[in-house]
Image 1: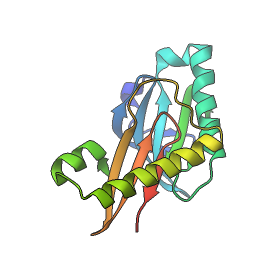
Image 2: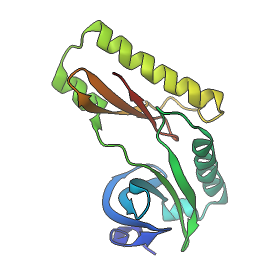
Image 3: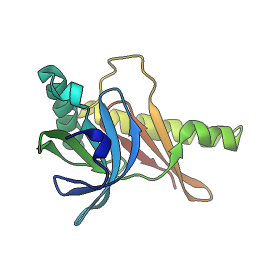
Length: 169
C-alpha cells in the first residue's frame, strides 16, 4: 500500500483525514477514531518498514511513549502493524510551531519565558525518569504552542517520541 494514497483509508480503526507532515522515518496524518476522536497517526515510511532495525526502533519509541502517564504529556493511544503498515497513534494537539509564535509575539516578558522553560523542563524530566527520553542527537526539539486563555498557553514538544504537552494557568 503506497503512502501517497493513504488519506481516506482506515488504519487500525483510525480514519486518515489529511496529510500533516513528513519526518525522516514517518509520515504524519490527522485522523479520527470513533471512540478517541481526533488523533495524530505516524506511519513508518515504506523503505524504513523493510529495515528490521528501523521497525524495532519505531516500535520501541512507541512503547516508551505508552509508558509515560502525566497530565502534561501527549498520550500514546496505540501502535503496531496493520495491513503491512507500522503505525503510532497519538493524542491530537492543536497549535502552531513555537518558532512562529515567538516570531509573531516578539520579545516575551521574562516570567513568560521562565514559565515556558519550567513547563518544558518538567515534562522532559517526567519522560526521562520513565525512560522515555534520552538525548541521542543534536537535533532540535520541535515545539508547538497553543493559546488557551489570554495569559495561558500549551506547548507541545517532540524530541522524537513521546510528544509532550505543557499547560500554564
